[in-house]
Image 1 (cartoon, rainbow, N blue to C red):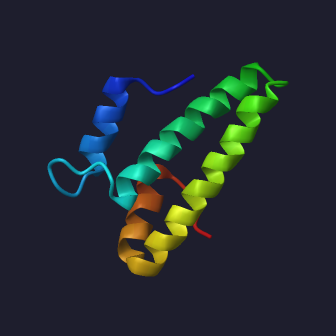
Image 2 (cartoon, rainbow, N blue to C red):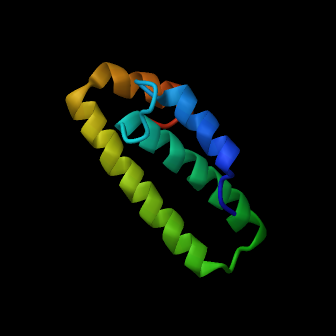
Length: 90
């Protein structure tokens, strides 16, 4: 139900701005997207798991806030990451 350590390292290396970057908005959005996709697969199988449903709603809200921040600060990076992760633009 969680993303593996190796997949998280791969996401960080793909979206990092600097070598040891784990805290930029792009990396955080990418990690949250991977966790959301993972939970969506889990919820497709376990429809009555309300605890996980609550967490996916919280993660989507957190990702939305980060995307709004990125859109305000750097619209070109927002467009790039939205296209890479196939996220709808709002």
